[in-house]
Length: 306
Image 1 (cartoon, rainbow, N blue to C red):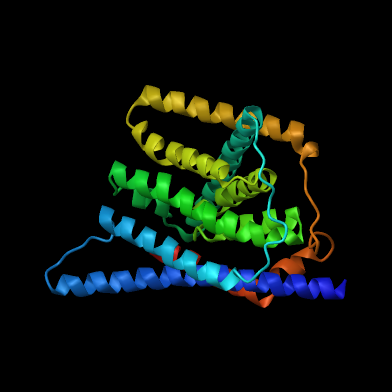
Image 2: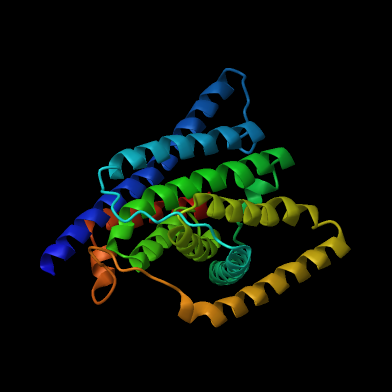
């Protein structure tokens, strides 16, 4: 048992270092690109930091550079218990998507409530960084970054690369750790809770099917509904009403589906099972994961300050 805990702690230390480095690279790139833009402004070249091309370039740089470095750090971890590829039925996928919508809505409500409380305590309004960025972008940029680029890159980085290497420690550990890392990597409390819930559902779907295409498709549809559709209906009252009814119907249906099927969820034990008594300490209270949490805290603070 002691030897298993040592192996598990060592593995998740590497995971924490890998994804903490991902966040550090994101911060470094933002600083570097910002510095370059400031330098160019002295030469008469003005590039607004909320422009379409800046968002596209910085987003791609974050995913490509950060993703590659993270992969290099954790690639030596053995891929022993990779999810088995199996086809999912339409009914199962529809149920999974409804649960995703429920997790998205509930997580968003928690995040909004928390930030409203913080706003009241500080005596000043808090600004949702996602809404602030979206409102300044064109539709095609929102589509390319949030509906195409983000789902593909994030599912590879936070599901494929990660879960293939930590499922050895059990499905429950892999799902929870993947969800936490995915949530914290969004860098603010507005997104953390719903990203965490979505990360949990996406991880379960990937583990059960072994097909990343399912989670990519779900991720794309959710981002499309939340960005493109959400923006388009704002100025058309009757469309906003239809949209609201659709979302609430999906949320309720997702809750019902989850409650009816929660006892049928399947979780496989790992060769070095990490879930159980003392799991939190082994999975999260190691050097790597503490490093990841500290870097995450920095990103959250910068998000609120900026």
